[in-house]
Length: 171
Image 1 (tube, rainbow, N blue to C red):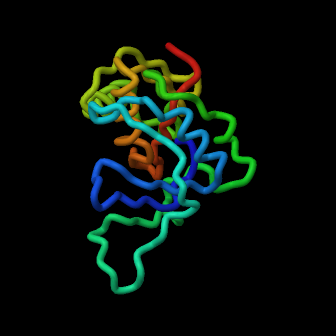
Image 2 (cartoon, one colour):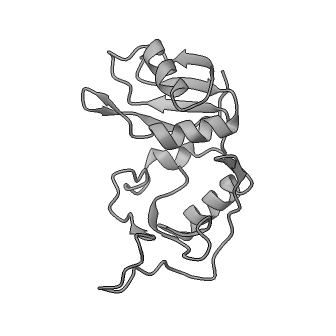
């Protein structure tokens, strides 16, 4: 949401902590300023800068029990193209989500049901005029964060993968 994650290393002795390497320092700052103090999975998350500049991949033949992952070529990256419009649409977490890349066959009811299945309550919904985009409001910011995690890049069929981001607008 706030940049492209390159690598993640879950700490061996502190499984509730991780080092996350972003594509650049600006993305790290964005993630830190917008995510520090947010609630996820019932816990407040704390995001600080690390003393490490990079997350090292485990040496060849060393088993780190899958604690380190490389996401350098992830299809989930939102900021691949320099000057991408995605940079202009970065907002702090809110209960209102912006949905895009919606195929014509998907209805408001389909989307309401999909988002309700993430464990939250859909409070409001509004299609944009062309029906390719919509705003959807969850009950809480935590529910919206969970829905974004679960449904960004969700395959809606017809070669459409749902794009989900936080909205600056409310419904």
